[in-house]
Length: 528
Image (cartoon, rainbow, N blue to C red; front, side, top):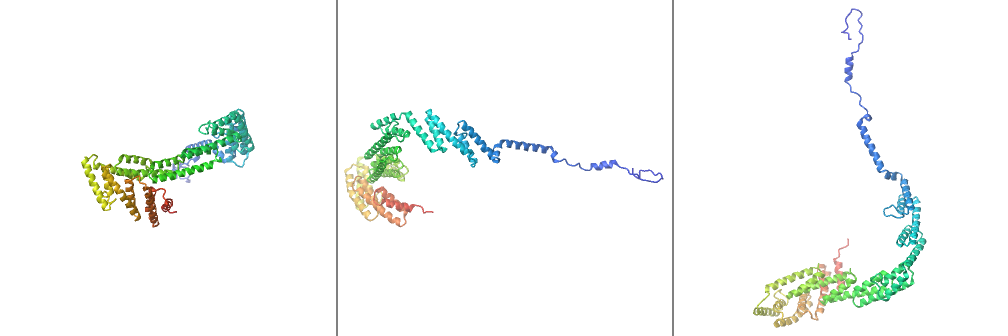
């Protein structure tokens, strides 16, 4: 109650204190209640429970790796225990890693300071020998060899391993009846069946020696059989059959690489192969392509990766391509196609073969323009016109130029019309000496391209002329001489072309190898 509410009684006016509870309650409601602590919030409890559950799962899943990291001794001991159980069960070696050997090696890799793993591996080696002995008693020779190999891998004492190996060989020999095998080898040797089958002499001797390496009869028999085999290889070489000889020599080497006669046989084979390569190169230079191809193929039969022989076969293919061009120029298209087929087979990637194919096509087109069938009178008239034009070109010294109007071109056209006409044959016989003279004159003047054109005309007119080989050799020498001069002046492109031309003309010409080496050196990129 307030003073104003109290009535005035006229007495001593005292004011008594009085609480206004309505105001107190209203003031209290204007203040916020204190916040609830975080640890009493339900949502925090849910998150905490989830994190705890995840930690438990991780511990369960990764307890082994974590234990290995935190307490490696525990992992090592576990491996040693597993290895001991595997050893007790006889599981010495297993590809899946559960064998005693693998488990001991894993423990050793984790802790190299502990010697239990090394001791365990020695126990595995001894158990491997015991298992090998048990297998030998039961005549399980393959298992015995496997267990012996395991013992050797684990460094079992060598004396123990060698002693058991000797017992194994003796038992195998006894079981296999090696006396009978040796007798069969001797009979095969006497019959001349040295190799080629399992019951031949050398395989049987080898079978005996695999079990009894010191068996004197087998050693002597193998020695004699190998000598006979190498003599047979020599007879193949004498018959120019290096492929068969090489096969026999290689087989002899597999039986005894240290045989006393083997180096001599290998040297004879190498000499024979080199002789065949040189003979093939000479045959190419002389235009004898079939023997050259046979020689190179014989070399490849003996040495399949011989680079020189493969390059030689490609040169034979290029020579066939050049011959196809000449035959097409004379309108002998059937022969030209045969030569092209051989060229493609031997040098399928050669640009020269592609050029020959194009030349044959052009010649066929030119032949078509002349007409396939002409009346006899018209053919004779055209032949006379061509021969007259040839004589005029001769009088002017136009043997090869200008193209299409030269004496040589006119003669070719006349030969295409009437190759068997007497007048055409007489003209060809008259032109040949002139072409030879052209060759000599141009060669002396160092005009090697024109000299080569004359030589090609000479070869076309008289392919079997005995003087052609010497002409090709001299022209090849001239290419080398001029190429060397241009190489000294820095013209590597011309030198490379000169090398190709010289090789095509005569692959055996003197100075070719030296010139080739200098060209290759000039073509090599500079060192970085």
